[in-house]
Amino acid sequence: MFPSRQLLQSQLSAPLPAAPELVLVTDLDGTLLGGASEERRSFYRWLAQQRERVLHVFCTGRDLGAIAAVLQEDEPLGLSAPHLVIGDVGCTVACGASLLPVPLAVDPIEARWKELEAPLRALLQGQPGLELQPCSSNRRLAYYVDLERFNPGLIDQLEAAGASCVLSDDRYFDVLPAGVNKGATLLSLLEWLEADHATVVTAGDTLNDLAMFETGLNGVMVGNAEPALVSHLPRLPSVYRAQAPGCAGIAEGLRHFGFDYLWD
Image (cartoon, rainbow, N blue to C red; front, side, top):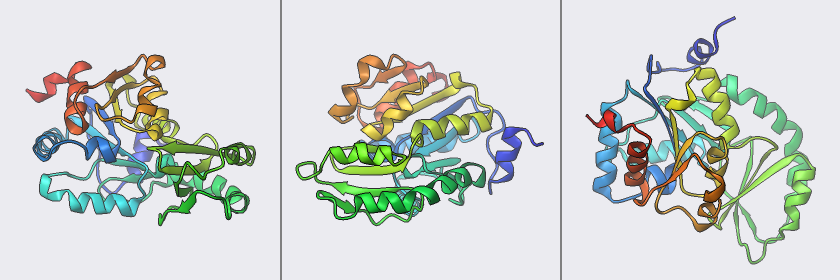
């Protein structure tokens, strides 16, 4: 049987760095896409220069179509495709270069979702305060939420039916297979990569990033993080609270964790 990393690489359309010194896992909106244009341009340039030393992973609530749009929109600022993508709040893993899903990661989630989707849709049908997002994912249900009209008791019903639910940024509501989230999918990916956890730094700004921070991996909560996420900081000893927003906050956190030598 192939070793984990070799099996993962065999399902990707582009090679991974042979021996990365840093595995950088970044949320998109508000994090990698956050901050002033010049700060973003500088950070994206650094990522491009360090591509063989830094294995970059997008970890986002966006689906693959929306990720493709981000790469096209931010190309003038120098944003390059990552090596790997975790999308759909943990329900999708894809090659960063091609955005083709990785069967090793996606197939087990797909199988679970096929059993869950119909009963979950039935529970969610006609619920007040929810508007289905135009996402292409087949492994979650993504809604815009109006918290003033939303019935919080619905979450208990969904969890009893085998789902997990994530409210973030006071406007997004995701319904996923139980146990699937950014953190759980990231840990599986790191196992396949055979990555030393000491080389990993995560970064995020909203509640759907909480599962990443709960892994115990080093994390950066950027300066513009939503208050609901910041409230969890006292129980997250491995997470650094940056002062700067967005990309500048990521860079601040990397220096805090001792990766400043990569800027030399």
